[in-house]
Amino acid sequence: MKNKIPDLKWVIKRRVSKNIDAAKEMFPTEISRVSRNFHRQIPGYSMSPLRALPNLAQIFGVGGLWVKDESARLKLNSFKVLGGSFALYRFIQDKLGLSDENMNYDYLASTEVKHKLGNITFASATDGNHGLGIAWATQKLGFACVIYVHSETSLRRIDAIRNYGARVEVIAGNYDDAVRQIAVDAEKYGWEIISDTSWEGYTRVPTWIMQGYTTMTSEIQEQMSGQGLIKPTHIFVQAGVGALAAAVIGYYHSLFGQDAPKCIVVEPENAACLFHSAQVDDGEAHSINGDLDTVMAGLACGEPSQIAWNVLKDTADAFVTVPDYIAARGMRMYATPLIGDPSIVSGESGAVTLGAFVSILKENKVDELRDFLGINENSQILFLNTEGNTDPVQFHRIIWEGSLPVPQEYWLET
Ligand SMILES: Cc1ncc(COP(=O)(O)O)c(C=O)c1O
Image (cartoon, rainbow, N blue to C red; front, side):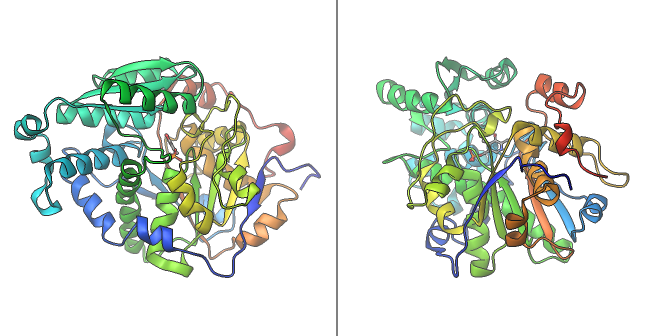
């Protein structure tokens, strides 16, 4: 290894025993059954694949590398629709006072429901994928939808949302500004906010959204047991506001308690609000400011979701930040696999965890984190490819044109 400074930063959480109360409360064991039972009724639903990369695993000296591949989920190219659609389901169920047994997708989309509920406009801020999921779901159910995006959002992402009939407004500032603005405007115009992030006094909908993500983790467990595995030993999960990370890590802690896998949260170095909160270490969620400049559009968030942080602060084992080229390396590695491994379409936010894993294993002076994680030939490592090609122009720039190259001093010694 060359004698260079590591390009990733980390905070390790060493605990004798974890407090899993928040995880258990938010992700009771039956919740993934309810959520999955709803999602499987959606026309076009199928389990997303869990892909194995056995040859890459061998090169890195680990037992297995597993990728939950959300790149084609419901043809929307990201896992996000699982959360928004489940929240809409819960919202309508709640309004109509119906039990899970009496609710189903066909009824949800029926004229009877629309007649009973009247005209509702659902609204949300987004950095792209969540808004697309909400636009898709509201169009399917026949409701109006308003989505706020921030000024750095790519036109491809905006057009994709408009294609599902939503009104899209571009808000000056970053993602957090769009979240603040939608809260003000929803109050003014009587819209119902379906936000994936939470704030004081607004927790019910984001809880449903996080619970909706457990369809994915429950599928993973089924797929892993089909491979003779009880659970992964390590999970690398990427974070924006932390709702996904809290859902995945919370689910595993609710299910396995103190025997849960080691969980590593990965963020872009310019948008690392959870890492920052872990660094401050006073139990509170802390925001970061700035333009949150990163190619990982889905992770460009400066304010943690409070309810997500409540789970993560007690259960995540490490928080890691990485520069953009590490996500680009992950994208290229997925797209051009070793012979015998499958090729995976992975966008910037989807691929960053594979990139981070490679850096942790191969970079110099990362021994403290490596030793703590204890990754070895028995490790079964899980990644979530949370998005596919959600921004085709950016995707081709990175994969075809070699944008965001790895600096030479960080090239892998192969
Ligand atoms: C592709 C992708 N991956 C991961 C995330 C992170 O999710 P969260 O904001 O819940 O941390 C997002 C968020 O939009 C995303 O779009």
